Image (tube, rainbow, N blue to C red; front, top):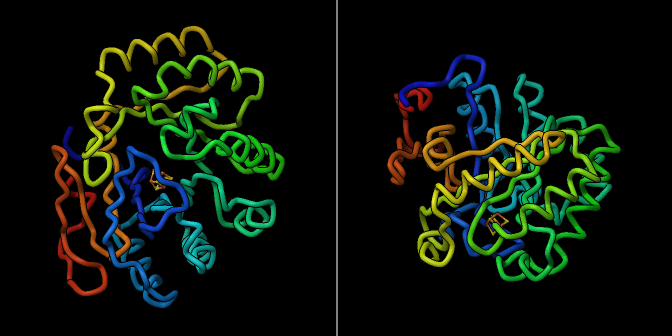
Length: 267
Ligand code: SF4
């Protein structure tokens, strides 16, 4: 699809830690990525991210809130005009944490794939995930923060999506419900490909049904080619990469290398 980034939507994903407090079977984080950078070292990386003309940072992981100084980094980014989006499983997003991030975060995308506790257990999120996310949605909306829901569609949860839509119809969020195809790249995602993958036609049929039957919900969907072409990313170890044809292309390391390319020009 070539270079579809305009100056207005230069988005960078920062997988700032590979540590996580959940264990999803479709996860594609790289588990042996070093991630012990100090605040000062992370600021060095952040300055380089900003220097590419980045307009949005998606703070992700792993679970980004596991990085002790992540809010200080978000503050620095906000002071430099960045639109900050936090992608989180919600576990650490207590009321106190919401108050702490509120001045710096524009959007929180909560990851949940089902409102069925057994499905969440089978996906690896744990039975308590639904109740945690429902609590976080309420407090985020009360705080005036925009909330998206991110759902990865796999064989285990496709049957639950109508129930999710029913819930979101009765309990509206103020942002989007983003449905994504499973992305079979790296680690656990690659190992579990056979038992997870839903074919594109079944995915698109379900998306159409949900959009038709629930017009009050702001549903968007994303296929694999869009997922990999949307963002350059920075790994927990500082590697800057783009992804093409399900392959990571590492352009260099933000801490150790002089990287001549602007990643947005390579998408
Ligand atoms: S998908 Fe997200 S929440 Fe689940 S294990 Fe991976 S990083 Fe953690």
